[in-house]
Length: 128
Image 1: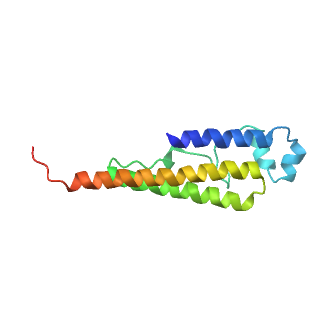
Image 2: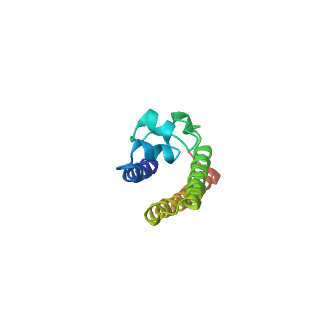
Image 3: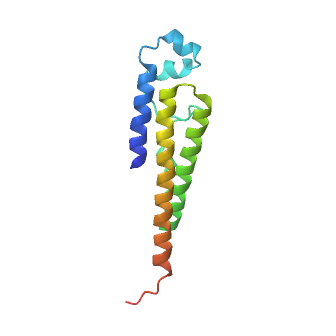
């Protein structure tokens, strides 16, 4: 569940960024609707405000399909971190995002290795 460890890091980052923020500052930063709904609490949502749903986990019951989906998710997360880095000018935030982005790359590579292993196993002659 590497995604959960990433979530813990992002939640901590969000908590530290929101610590001491007044309602007026949240409004000035364009977070008025978020603040009205959630205060300073972390709420699982994307940048458009769409809430997290378990539907994001696309399990098919097929190892190839599942691993390819996992690899795509890692690349999407990497791209999201890069997009946020393009918007951020905070060195501490950027260091955290770069760390997470690098982990996405490694996870993508590990899932690719697992996919290679699955293909190898699928292509071997099996005698029972």
